[in-house]
Length: 83
Image (cartoon, rainbow, N blue to C red; front, side, top):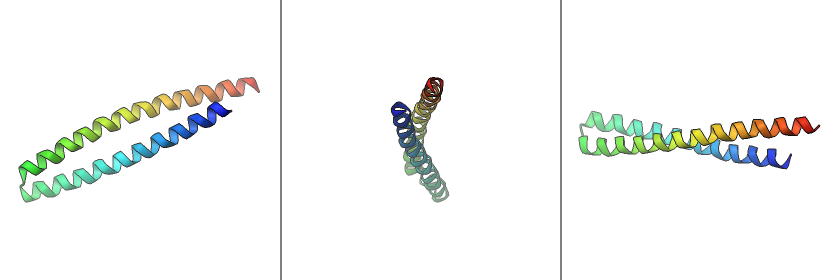
């Protein structure tokens, strides 16, 4: 059960990272739209690049989260099989 608890804790940390990055992407997209309206292309391109970096990081963390979910399920099944 110790392993299961550790996996749950790790997954919660990953979920926090996912939520943070999603909110950051939304914030950057809002800035991008504002800059587009102001027609400040150079700044908009910088924000677009930041959005792409954050999307890539989000994808990486999402992949980790999926792997942790699989480990969590396996740990639970292993624990249940022992009972």
